[in-house]
Length: 576
Image (cartoon, rainbow, N blue to C red; front, side, top):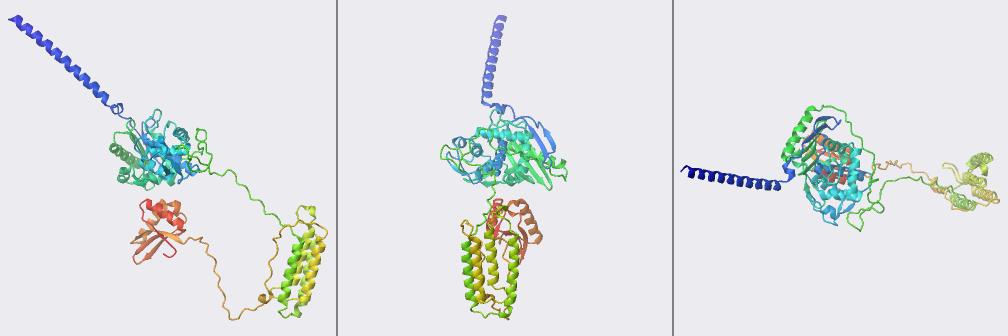
């Protein structure tokens, strides 16, 4: 009986062991299968890093793992946009230039604008899409339009990063998708955000738009939740990949204080935004209320030199060849040639003789219609003699032809003689008119003098443009004005240059509110409103906030830019 019990116990133990081995084998298989399904980027969380700085001075207020080289994700597009702004400022490309989309750009994965291969789109829309939508296809198209290829543009990005002081950053593409060697740090990205703010302030407003027109469609801002939720937030750029986690470089301004905070490795966009809010609050607590702005220096412009970019050889625009190959010309002026001096006219004596004869004949005809005044003849003759004496003294001291003046003495003497003849023949503005016999004698003397002085010298014949205008006819010059004629008031011509236009940015219940809106609008749109006149116009309906002293083109441009920021604006014409 005992043997039977022992045998059954042995069988039971062996069964339990077999069952245990089976369970362990199944668990091992399931665990292995589960690890295959879990991506390695999710198996290990992205590294965390953070930096907070006072944007005015660059002082670091908080940092953690600030110099760890991590995946920047779409924060990369900050450098893409920085170089785009640089290229526009230095004439490499214009905002309205059409860019042909390459197959490489159109095939980029989301986030994207949805551009098609061969499509042409204005450069300004690529900038908007990359800044607001974080579109990968737009970022690649920007790089190819500026440097000819994405690889060459990535080399320019790395070189620019080093010039900005981003010593631990290397770029391999224009969009930020994960690629071997494409790394940066929280400190370097904070530095880049500060340079964008101070080096290109005219473009910084793009990062605060909640939506924007990107040419093919209106796109939302990837950072719109923080912009709407945090007081003073106005930028800058988000980023996300599985390898990087959720990244963000944010900036906010309150009063005179501005803080820039950067986060790498957020677990989600929600937790990342919560961390950024915490860091921005920390920055505002630690930053001084007043600080002198110490803007970072903009690096020297180098352009595409030394990066193997496509040669720029021709007209601005796009080629008809392969997609993405942009051919344009640098618009910078290397030299400015001085204009040639105006040539000194060489006088033909025959022209002078003919002109004097015509003028004399005209004056004789006019003088015959007016009674001569004999009592003033002697005085006028005396004045003419004095004029002859002065002219003779001037001729005695005239320089020789070798003195370097280039004026022939005989021609100079002929011109002076002609002037003396006009003094004899033409009447003074208030004096009497000489007799016709005296005028004829004077004309003959002038003609003889000119011919005699020019006879021995051959002068080059050119069109003479230095003749004095013909005198007003005597009958008009001596006509007395009516005694009862009222004086004519002549006002000066307008010097406003057509600046009769303006814009209206709203109507308010108090003058203080209107002045406040005018000041805030002028500070936010200095590019088009600089130099205009801020004026509050009172009416029975309220107080109108107006900017005046603009041309029609300036008013239209200012309204377009303000309307893009959701600021109400109407143009005011000369009749408004």
